[in-house]
Image 1 (cartoon, helix red, strand yellow):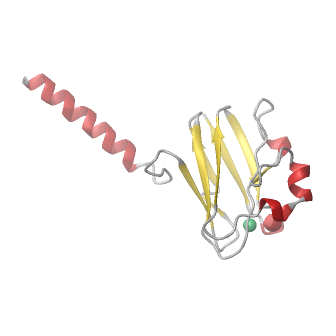
Image 2 (cartoon, rainbow, N blue to C red):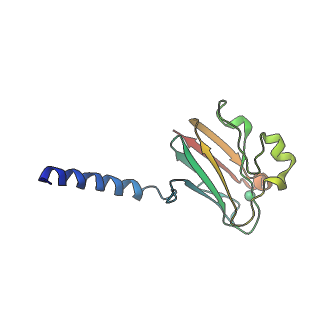
Image 3 (tube, rainbow, N blue to C red):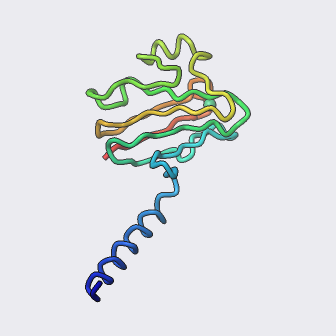
Length: 136
Ligand SMILES: [Cu+2]
């Protein structure tokens, strides 16, 4: 291996470290992490991911929460998503308990369409438990 190859390797190692260092919301398997916490909040409340990323919500609190997309606040070409597998916001609101995640339960959705997605936890909507995912 000549000196130029060694320098190249050093450069890519530095880049890899820099990317890992600024992605605190990324799980080891490459999914993005959003916590649902005791303060009736999604953490982080706003998250930006690249297209094709799977976001995993984890209920890290003692009460049940939902992840329910606002049907009018997602890209028009994007499929609807909600915990409980509902195909519309109306269906999710008609069966809130069917979408509840208990403590330590998770919900995942893969975002393939770029744009901005707003979502809510139905039981804690009045407490401001909403979040936004931006897909680039
Ligand atoms: Cu909630």
